[in-house]
Image (cartoon, rainbow, N blue to C red; front, top):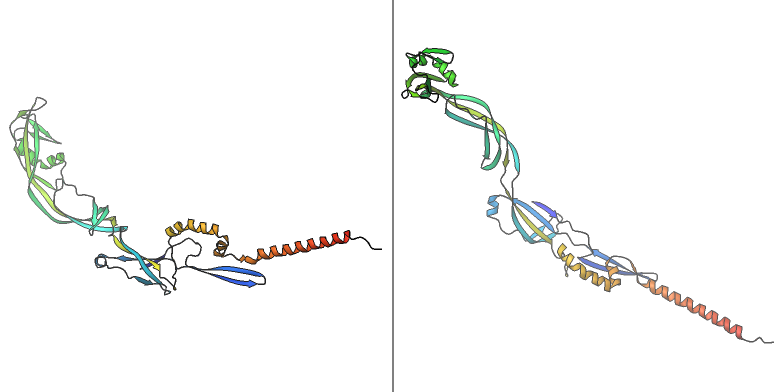
Length: 322
């Protein structure tokens, strides 16, 4: 469980205020003492699916490590996406009945891992032959140009025109080389005509034949390895908002930022109409008697000066006695 305290901007006293008045000589001094309220509290906790299904309303009262008491003001549950992490993955794939002409993939894509979305490719590594056998069913078409000629060119071999099929079978390895097939994986056992002679595009006479035989089949086991990205399952977060519990008979008034903003214009009006109260609120020292004392002192000095001048005038105006 994670506990967080909201960061609030410093402001004038909101929770409580006491003004202490005391006299130093002829000076009356007022000091405003502020009692700051405790900050709101945010508590979060992660939940699994089982906890989410049996979730009930959180406890209405929460106490922190110092013993301060807070009361629940609101709560919510959010689903947060899981992290995207890199993993090393190994997969073994078995390919059955593969003939030599087929090409096995050198890499395979990964789109899912353990039921979670994934992204990446694995490269082929170790290969093992699990089984090998020869199977009938291999056939490939062969075309004889200039049908009826005395001889035919089969790659680097020349065969006679009297029995071209039989001679072609005896040179099966040369025929496989011309077809691009490995001799160790294919065997030509017979060659038969596939239709009669016909005139080809060049105007000559041609005839098709069909070579048949055996092909080797293998079962392969290939191990693919590599790094992929996996999207982990999402998590659920329970977020609980707590406000400080009320204290004292009158209670502590806790204002959030929106309430402070709404109360600010009214507060400025009060401060403008009551300047003395504003200074006391602001925590400044107020010398209430200072102004009155200065005014009184000025009046006494003015009165003494005016009385002295009046006496001197009277003495100047009296006639001298002989």
